[in-house]
Length: 119
Image (cartoon, rainbow, N blue to C red):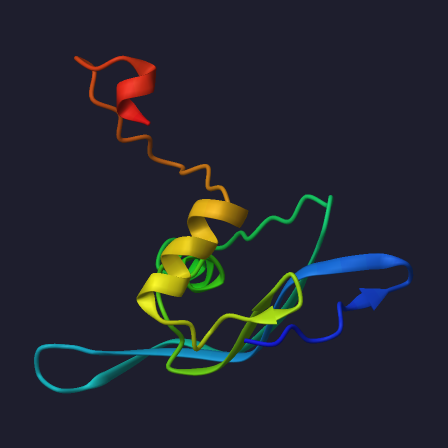
């Protein structure tokens, strides 16, 4: 895929961008839950960004989409100037392996393993 022009606002690089991202889920009775509706956000390189809200407000859903762990129902996501929302599973895996890192709120470490084994 071809990289788009790197996004810069006031001399600060946008490392991650969402544009009109929606995520819908179908539940057991066939009804649709609209978890995210037209979310647009700019995340700047080297800046702390915090998502806060009550439980169930879809913060994790948004972060999973931004981190290429899930795909939006519609809308687009760019990382480092490259549109990633239509990446294949293999491309998503490579992106996370080579360019992203996550710090999870709930750590799922196995207590009988060393730190290296847990990684």
